[in-house]
Image 1 (cartoon, helix red, strand yellow):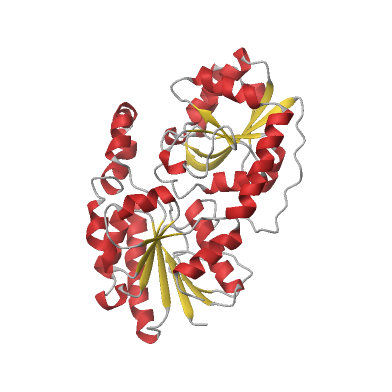
Image 2: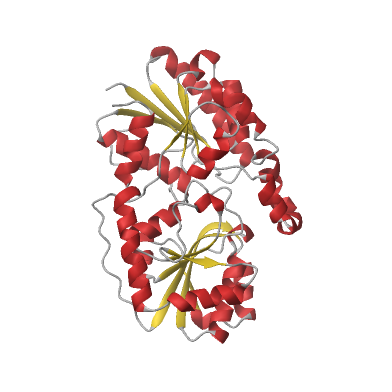
Length: 389
């Protein structure tokens, strides 16, 4: 088997972020299948597999856009040198935005581009979504400046100009595939991300008198964590269920802001914060995952958190997004949240918060997991799209 080079610039070596976790899973999965894998990442990551790692930093700030672009330029220079001695290597660069594609195009030598497959892990913000949420984006414009200008319909024209300059493009949601195919006549490959092995078998859930709700993610307005607290307050005062909410934050955003909201609504006895969690353990202990997302841009790869919930048989409560169509089926594996009517959302959660409903949803999710969301499906998809067979 020939050499495979995987590269990523926006990387957290603790893998507490979806792109990074999927990248490492892919490298390890291909190595396990016998491929000679080399990775190029800003920082080193721990792995039990025989992977040749090329790194160029001691520390990397994942949240820094400037640093991510600087890392990508460095990776292009490394690849230009590596391909001199190994021109037949299969190269796969993982990016998230049109601007990153532009940087790759500029700094990767023209002769090398046709040997490179690009994996794009985020959809772009459409004009329709911006218009539909214009009040929210206007209020939070400073926080979304980078998104609106660098990963939206304003910069998407770069896909039209540049996609054809590379060997192949891979995405991880059908919604994103349709986005890119509307901009380019070039084929776009789809690989469904999976996190857990097909051999993973979660223990059956035991539903108690107190419904265990769970949130895992950033403490950011885009993730709707403020709405999460409002939802908990309504459940406390207007519903007939007893619940406890565990909040597990990943390090982005302001926890102090959330703590203030909890005090305002007198929810201290109903909420627990947990750092440094074991995702499987938390999802196994929970009865429902609450994700009050305000936007799905940036997570429309099919969020790992949703894939993990389905894999463990954990029912999900989430707003309706076109990006999630095909994985989320309301009334079957998920509960629909309406952020403009939190009372209605609370009633929807109360309606399914019984052992019969939750067990039925959980059983269907496990069937979904085995059929399409395993780690083996993910690695097999990449093996196909990179022509490694």
